[in-house]
Length: 548
Image 1: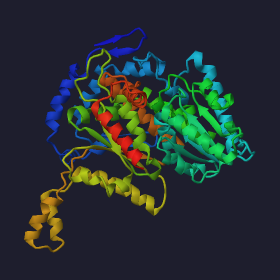
Image 2: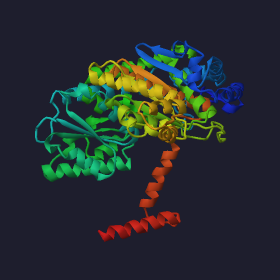
Image 3: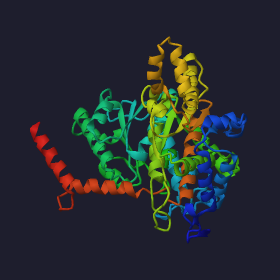
């Protein structure tokens, strides 16, 4: 059943498990759960051709998932019964799908995929023009510190969505920043991260970008004050440090009170959430690092995926299929975690970015009608880069007791022997984690080592790898701005589809706010509301401090 609220946004009134397709999927899971992935391939030689799709030059292989055509049909029926087609239209039309905060989620507008609301159009345009002019001038050496020396080092101060997106993107596209000012990031309130960023920085040529939508984020402001103190210590107490600061914030008065010139404060619309904000002024460090043209290509890549998501039939729609497979694994096969395995050093921070996107968006239990979800929502997202992980946590994937879903992300375009080894390792890991090694194969391997039969029988069970780990492999032509934009938008839309089908709001984060409130209450006067453990820990910490 579907209905509409006062905002015009379509809502699904039925919990997902009440939909007919949900019940059918349980039956399919019972049928497929006991079938090993290798058996599915053995009985279906054309499996790769049918279960792999592409958008432009991006290829996605879904064939290593524990499903068949009949189960996949039921997943598409689930999408239809959830009202997903109308939800996608509502998303791009500006309906208030962020229903708890009564606003739209229009981050796609920053990449030209839907209209900017009329009331915000002039501000968005003028902010974009000022942002580009500032980045251009800085890259040309025309932005100077208080002593007249050109800025050659930019340090972005932010946390959460104000840090993870631009940090990840700058790392991914670092090859494009050779002639730009060096751009680095500080998020942790632990002073060590800022100290390390300042180790090789020159106060005369360093600029800080303070990224905080409200200009009240405690960790970011603590780092901003520490950065200003560092400048004053080097430049003198009377130095005008405003030449060394810019801000991305919707609180210009607070930024001005800190000492940031109004022309260097760049706002972002309220309808852009933090974890979706790299496309907006939060992306200023990225624009500085790679230049305006490369940033435009990044936006174009995201826009390309938007068009694909809106216009492509569900059976060929990459975000929809990825979302449905995630629901299949999480809710029907009982797979509780998703490992993200990028085979590219430039994507080393991609798992952390995706952790926030997935777990902050869909790590919720309250449905639209205020009831509690009776099905599992977001999986635990974790991961690490390619061959590094092979020598660490992949052991659990091979021989541990848990089944884990895997996303392999593999840029294939770079030339050279080392990169070819990287790509081959990715393919080998995906194949081996699916196929595994049975007891007979373990015995055969040990026999090649000329071991006594007794030793073979002793060791063989320890070499068994069950396999049967489901995975998606995404092939990227290269790691460039356009492809990176496609990749990020692909996962954004996947998360939206899953949240919609689960019946939760993917665009708020009230749990995060509880943590902030608790931190403020602990830092404030004792009101008798702290639990005994917290009181004990605070007292122990104070005793340890006095011991130093």
